[in-house]
Image (cartoon, rainbow, N blue to C red; front, side, top):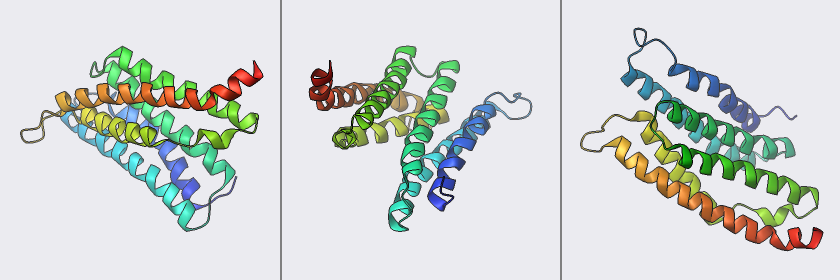
Length: 189
């Protein structure tokens, strides 16, 4: 495992998960819910920023590695799954929506792994829809974590609409990846 700045940022993102989750389980006497919401939102936002930053630095500093390419999406999926599970526990997200998003992440990751094993991993490059899905999903999670109103913006309502949109984009991008992989699947069945 190459020890470089991009990989350290990815590890930092993974190490932030228990801290992020644990914030919500502190006694309310220690930290009121509004402050828990704010701190968890800031931690999730920091994780989202490091996600973009580690890839940028890997390319810019010429520090891209196979291990980093493996670890980065794992860190992303762990952070999103942790956030959705916390949001489920707080009753801020519908269980079906959480299942769609987490289930898609597992299914597409498995599909990508299989495609890489058969030497067709290049055909599973991230799609534009996948990128839009990720941005929508991150914005929705941030708003649902924060939960409180921001001036006249009802963060929970907007976050709920965005998470539903993210679920639709999630299914759409999964169909896209399945369509890309289908020739390989039918060839090997």
